[in-house]
Amino acid sequence: MAIGAYTMAILTVKTGVGMWAAAVIAIGVSILAGLLLGLPTLRLRADYFAITTIAFSEIVRYVALNEDRLTGGSQGTINLAGAGAAVQYDESWQRFQTKVQGWLHLGSKDVTMLVLVWSAALVLLVLLHVAVRSPWGRVLRSIREDEDAAASLGKNVFSYKLQSLAVGAVLGAVAGLFYAWQFSFFSPDDFAPLVTFFAYTIVILGGTARTWAVPVGAIVFGVIYAGTRFFDFPPFSYFDSADRAYLRLAVIGVILIALMAFRPQGLLGKREEMVLE
Amino acid sequence: MSLLEVRSLTRSFGGVRAVDEASFDVEAASITALIGPNGAGKSSLFNIVSGFLRAERGTVRFAGRALRRQTPHRIARAGLVRTFQTPRTLTKLSVLENVLLAAPHHPGERLVRVFATPRFARSHEAIAEREARRLLELVRLDRHADDYAGTLSGGERKLLDFARVLMTEPRLILLDEPMAGVNPTLGAQLLEHILELREQHGVAFLLIEHDLDLVMRASDTVVVMNEGRILTVGTPDEVRRDERVVDAYLGAQV
Image (cartoon, rainbow over all chains, first blue to last red; front, side, top):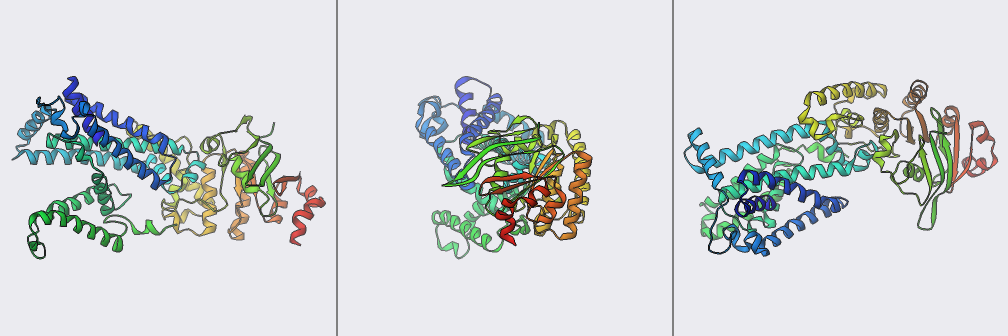
């Protein structure tokens, strides 16, 4: 996400590359970063691999935080062109969004953004769904279960892992781009590890190994995360709004624990798949 | 030139030489049995030949090509495919998917092809599915084609692994105790299939098997291992008469 968003913003502001071209390059750079990360770390066992990827994202964040001249540092993209010279990277996006809003006769910018993001998500989800159900996806599923078995049948396990990393990098980059466009401003703090853990939460909520579990999980998570702000009935009304903002994190935690206890396969997952050995 | 040539293969674990200067050949379209008491190094030898384990010394040549430092998937693609002692069934895939996975040169397994030439990928998948169903019929698992493979019994999993290996269109199959846990009637059928595959398609087999009756009846050549070394190589009759074999192996059982 961070690499996608920053590459796009930096190229647009600093080099005069068009924003759309910058966005495409950003996706390419993200893929490259993903592959580069994968080459040395894919030999690691699943959980250690997860830890190194989180560490890698932290490295990216710290670089963004400290390379002031490249990224604007802790002040974020507002500082991209140096102090005092406020430049925006999303003029093209704003024009595009206004146009779409006109075409579809939508009420507000926010609604337009909602439509755009969900359309993009839907397209990507359908593509992913096709990929996962293809023979290609079958190889990935076999590797998830037993690498040696897949290798013994002639499948190049390493290559498939790299491919799945690349696909993940594309999705992350696209998410980063939309994030950057929605807020017209971002800083390294927006890519704190918490974001990764929210993503895990969404996957666990929806159910692992199911394409459509991700949007379902995202909606449920979004409703809980944003919706709990508006809890103004007891017991939540005993707290003021600032405290409630923290309380909702606790609510999410409780929901996750309950889910693990009563429905470990997630909302859409198949329980049978968890017990098969 | 033999199909498989194993020369002075050596590998130790700690101080123990699991495989010690092992040399033997497997001829094309032959059935070679690898026998020996537990811990003789048979499975380690399999692991080295199939690329899952590195040898410290020695060479393996398959169809004239050296396999040293080859990865397991390359060896499998070259036509040398193995099964495992405990079946490596992919339990979360369906029985049919397990077999389909083994289809060689499948264009649908390339992500670009899935989107660029979807029709080609799909038509290949249809052909593969027909072949997979035929193989499942062969091992009598066609009734379970759409069940999760994790619902199969141990013996059925052995058969599924066998069908999966056949799907790769191999030239040499390494079978690690193919009959263990398979009911005798089905085992006899399995043996028929092995003989038939050899006759009709020239497939060679190297198998580890503890059922000596079966070994003596079915194999052309018997390789006897003991404590990492090749004790002797010969026809079933020769091996049966060899006193060293009787001492090391058969004697221990009687």
